[in-house]
Amino acid sequence: MSHLIVTLLMVDTTDNVTVNDLNVWLRDNGGGFLNFFGHHRPKHVAPGPAAPWGGYKAANVDVWGGVLNTLDGRPIRSHIARMPWREPDCVQLLMQAEEDMYFHLWMIRQRQMDLYTPEEETGRLGWH
Image (tube, rainbow, N blue to C red; front, side, top):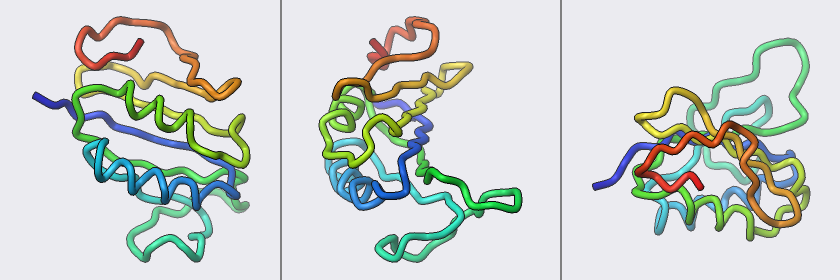
């Protein structure tokens, strides 16, 4: 049985091509894909609905989001940590499983995903 995981990925604006590579992997292994939500759609991003940022200035990060239908978040986080990000310290991953009350935040530090939210055991999705 799989579970739904709401997923938000924040990256530096120079790393959108890497997110496209991630989407190829997610379609094959991660139970979905991430859509672009940002102020200026990069040229290589396929047309589709995009929610612009609020406010009067462009953000210095791009946000990608989607709902992944997967059994375990660990392979996704591991794959993201291994990808060739131009700015790995800017990568922030928020994931919320359907039974969780809040998002879990991971950031890449020294090429590995570190958890920056309380370690509440969910028991099913492999957060640790």
